[in-house]
Amino acid sequence: MSDPVRVDVHAGSRASTIWIGDGVTDRAGALLDAHNVGGKRFVVSSPVIWRLHGERIARGLGGGDPILIPDGERFKNLQSVSRIYEALIHAGADRGSTIVAVGGGVIGDTAGFAAATFLRGVTLAHIPTTLLAQVDSSVGGKVGVNLALGKNLVGAFHQPALVLVDPLLLATLPRREFRSGLYEVVKYSMIASRDLFERVARDTKAIFAREARVLVPAIVESCRIKADVVSSDERESGLRRILNYGHTVGHALEAVTKYRRFRHGEAIAYGMLAAADLAVARGALADLERQALARLIARLGPLPPASDLLIGEVLEAIRRDKKVVDGKLHFVIAIQIGATMTIDDVTEEELKAVLERLGLKRGDP
Ligand SMILES: NC(=O)c1ccc[n+]([C@@H]2O[C@H](COP(=O)([O-])OP(=O)(O)OC[C@H]3O[C@@H](n4cnc5c(N)ncnc54)[C@H](O)[C@@H]3O)[C@@H](O)[C@H]2O)c1
Ligand SMILES: [Zn+2]
Image (tube, rainbow, N blue to C red; front, side, top):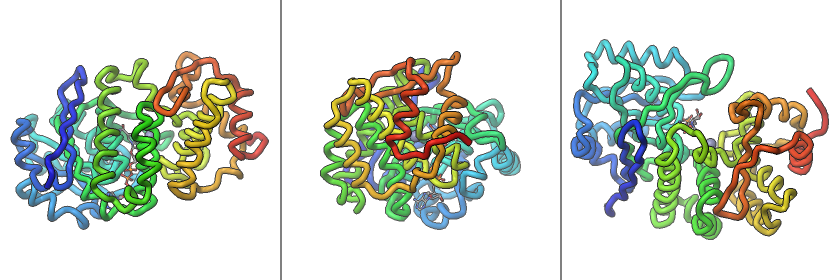
């Protein structure tokens, strides 16, 4: 195993360290010890993930039975959180215990929320198993669950003491899930690194083949970018908003399709195209840069269709979004590949024109 890379998140609430490298989970127990993540450890995972990787992870952690909760966005709810609390109580967990979340963003957010709230908060560690979780959801301390009335409506900021990112776990990840995470990597490149953008474009095949020499550095750089942003703005007052690049339109597309049609990253891919188009229309971004983004997104693979979605409905969903503060929509645009700015004077007309050019259908619901 080559040496793992360390990335630190300097969040106000607590120190958080990420270790990234092929095989880091094999040393999970020793790394937790080294970071004083002591006490009794309770793994929370899903049956699918545990069947694929449980043996290896249990060995790395030095044993222990996991608390298994079902996989899937519809189980990211308070009922699953309750099941975790109950299992913790039955197993004798106390304030000094640690929850180790092993899974994708759904498991990480749910187990993370349980850790933030059980006995007013216990230590959390993440072993993310999807690309999206490795570069995004396990970093930054946001945890939470969905309500029937909407996504991520209940949550907390709870920094994990430790995140162990083992790209070898991605070997079993279905291609579409892998691609969904890759769009977030493209997002990081758009907001902070032209070099990362060019590497993803050049080495697309090798990345899909999950070759460590290209995949590991792409994950490391993505984590560094997110860690840097979160370190300077843990609670999303300003700077952290740039992480929402592509998410204004993206979230709206997910909402109008009831979270069924798009994987999160796929919706973000559309959102990034929309944001780039809006920036070009304003003269803030060169059209050649927009074209490069569109080419890269096309190269990563097909996106589910969006041409049947009604523009009026998408606009309505944008208006309801959490990114609207005091009636103003904060919209992140790239001004070149690797640099962004936030604008708060986007008009309905502009958004409508962008959605039209994206190929959506004219009309209201
Ligand atoms: N907290 C945050 O900051 C943050 C950021 C982004 C997204 N999220 C949340 O993350 C969630 C999405 O996460 P996700 O994309 O990881 O989805 P997910 O957790 O649903 O995982 C996707 C699928 O992959 C399977 N899987 C996981 N690891 C695997 C592996 N190694 N091999 C084979 N299959 C595997 C899972 O069983 C699941 O079916 C959403 O709920 C979203 O709100 C949170
Ligand atoms: Zn996202």
